[in-house]
Length: 148
Image 1 (tube, rainbow, N blue to C red):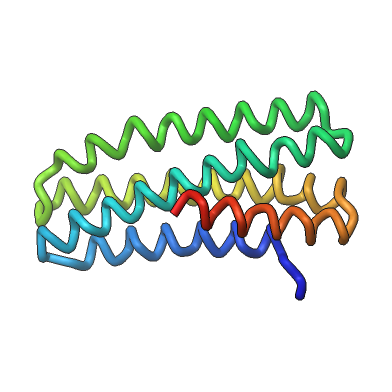
Image 2 (image 1 turned 90 degrees about the horizontal axis):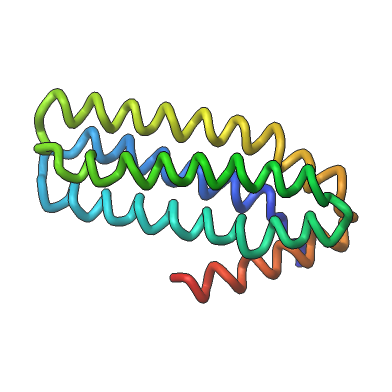
């Protein structure tokens, strides 16, 4: 069985964007609260997998300084996401301000995903053998199960 770590992480990104789209569409405040919690949980799992699984694999395969730089960029994005989520959670659902903040947050996540695709994913594809990618996929699956 093939474990595609890049495809799995890209699917995670799409899932968060879909949750944000759903968040804007709902007018039920309790559902919005639940969706925000899911977004927060998914972002946390995604960031921890990058920090704990992907980064070490890239460093081990010879990525060194470039992998460290990429991790810092990912951590900066994650810090911004963590700063914006509480503000979004305090905004009254159903208001134009809420919808605008969700859209802005989604756009920021899309930018992060594009940069991740261009840098981190391409680095993994070029630096790791198919066997290493498969092993990375298994490690990601195992860590994801632990975090959820």
